Amino acid sequence: MLLLLISLLQFTPAAFAEDLDSDGYTAETGDCDDTAPGIHPGAVEIADGVDQDCDYVVDEGTEVYDDDTDGWSEVDGDCDDANPLAYPSGYEWSDGVDNDCDTVIDEGTDAYDDDLDGVTEASGDCDDGRADVYPGAPEVVDGADNDCDGYADDTTSAYDDDGDGWSEDAGDCDDGTVFTYPGAPEQLDGADNNCDGVVDEGTDAYDDDGDGYAETSDGTTEVDCNDYNADVSPGAEEVGDGIDNDCDGLVDEGTSANDDDGDGWSEDDGDCNDADRAVYPGAPESADGVDQDCDDLVDEDTTVSDDDGDGWSEDQGDGDALAGDCNDADPDIHPDAEESPNYLDDDCDGIVDEGTTNYDDDGDGLSEADGDCDDSNLNTYPTAEEINDGLDNNCDGVPEEYVGWACSTANPAGGGLGLLVAGLVATGRRRKPRA
Image 1 (cartoon, rainbow, N blue to C red):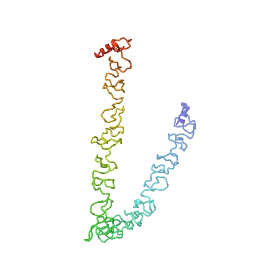
Image 2 (spheres, rainbow, N blue to C red; image 1 turned 180 degrees about the vertical axis):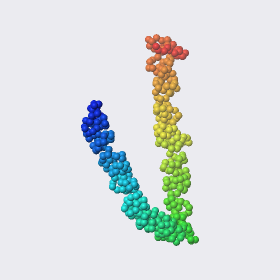
Image 3 (cartoon, one colour; image 1 turned 60 degrees about the horizontal axis):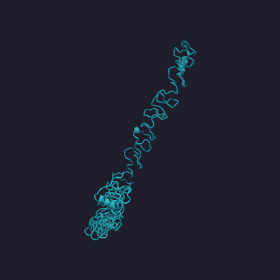
Image 4 (cartoon, rainbow, N blue to C red; image 1 turned 120 degrees about the horizontal axis):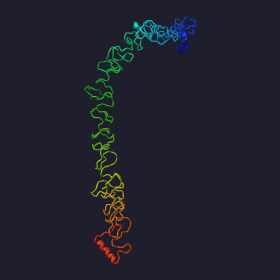
């Protein structure tokens, strides 16, 4: 099309009326390429990618053109380019046409005899992929419905004739009765119902386990409560196996596997005293001198137990040497411990840090650790007001200046001056604060 436009642009209006390629057509009369004599309206289209007949369709009618618009041309393999239902890999229909262009007609459809047994699916072949399956074929043991009657292996030994779920090949010793097959419940009917070669075993009258007892009594023997276990019968020895061995209605009685005290634990489970319901693994420990939880420890985690190993327990009084621990989780805290400046009551006397630098001995609100330079004097502590007592009341390390005395006075306590100082102290007069 681009070449056509370029060619047209080369012509003048006069050229449109002139047959430049002498093919009998001018551009004015429809010649789409008046420089090529083989291109004009009505020319024969050839497979060359050019629009010879100037109908704006390229290669139509040739083997490279998809005439039926099915996506395939003759060159691509379309065996019938006039039928959009026929092309390579097309779906084969039952229409008498080679739709997939493989030279075989209707293959894979109900009308085609795929297995060449002479019968198609449309004619009743129930498996047209097997030549031995068709209406009237002999039935054989292969799990297939050979004769297409709806039943597989019927009339053979592999077929379950009585409908009990077992065929003769599977072990049914009487395929004519639904009460006889491998594993069937044995009945008192004189027949080998379960096909094991033994008649009536497993019934109440039969001693199945060979221990001399059956489920029903013949008047001379007691009843077996489990006729499938030779270790279970009246008079058998009871053992710790979770079974009523002696058929008395009790399980494991008299053995270490029995929970004698009913606390949920037996000796085999770890109960260290199966005669006491309060004693078993995990039981709460009480302060009674008994190992309730069976961990080989007595009274642990109670108030009479020394939990931290410092020689003291929580209980107090009655002259007990192990009594009075106020924190039985810390071995450094007990009545004999030395008090340390740690904000704890180490010696369990109800007082914290007494006798240490953390304790406020004079009750002025500050301890030595807080900066009290004389913790035996209520009037001495940081920020205290200086008074005329000859002491460093505010703990600033500077000697006090006495009111009424010059700074040059060497000994304010001597002679008449001493009397004056004593008088000031007695009247409670305070010195002037330092400048």
